[in-house]
Length: 553
Image (cartoon, rainbow, N blue to C red; front, top):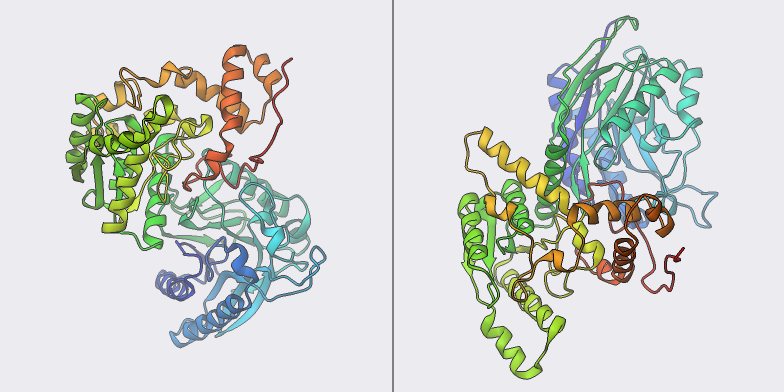
């Protein structure tokens, strides 16, 4: 019996773009055929994009996906690729559901061969946690799927099915499969890569067959898919791995002799800072391009947050498509204005200066605001300028706030919180500094000019809304703040647990109070790429109106 060549097509799809997704399937299948593949496996819901949310419930969408699938099968046959087995994901036909009063569609994988659908599999385990809401829109599958490819028995499951003990994966052992093909739409989060490979290794050992894990890549709204597709052997050995954050065709041969498995290309893992940075770039690029934006505009204050967002933007869309606006007030320092101009020059961005002073004076001539109201007025004038330029010139406005600020409510609604996308929404301040230093180091190592001015990294953070203002006037140091926020938000620890960790009670009470009072602001903040295990948004759903307060012990 001959070896079987399996191609893992790690591609970027767009939700609802059924025509282009279909063309991508055809193009990558041809690449796989030219590479001598016997089977090509695509990610979860390739035809429709993922996640499709309530689009799954529209009959018109279901019909379009079904028609596209039949068209793909026919075109593959016409192209002389009928002998190739092509495994793709799509939305399945509506079926009765024990969990819903009305029938629901399925999250389906199909095998195309000789111009037709020769096998199908409906995802059994429907995740309903974190960013997932599949139990709401899909019906669960009940049957397993084993197909013969080149005389070898291949099992097929979808994503969450390998995360749950038992079920369709456990049945593969009895079915004596020789390889398990897994279609995935697994979003990126920091540190998740090794969790996937360790889980896959356990499943491969349980069924006594190699496991082929194909993951999608690209940005989709607030999710980033990192690819990193791989193959693991029954002994847990990593047999092949694709690079992260790029489309790729990974080839691996299923050996005739299972005792001596073949090894394919193994991409090197990324360090933490590079992995997160590339996730931010991928998320922004995907959101902009898939929503028809070719350029972005943001306020350049000379501070670290806007500097990092500008660098990410230049890497995602090209420096010439980044439009930076310095909007100084009477409180803006000279070095902040200089740093903003320096940054724009370093990344090749368009740069303009628009003083807010005359506009603030006009408002104040009518309103006579004081204190925080006067400070927020400055931020809101800046927001109006950016939105005006967006409307006039067609740029996507980027909010530059970070997760630490968003957690404690240090953002101004209709001010610095305006925009269509927030690249640092899930990046705390400590990581902002680490990413900035990493990006500059990469540039130096490549013999390039570091994109971020050193003074933007080293100077104390300040909103510069009043004389001599710095963030630490009203917040704990960011390294301490981020520790408390991680425990309270990421790990859902209460006041008693925080005090048990050794945090000062005054710091705990202040931080907890700020976080709890700012939920309404977070609901109105633009979406941004999820890079941690728990991001603000679909991961963390708390009521805005709530009188719950952490009890004082």
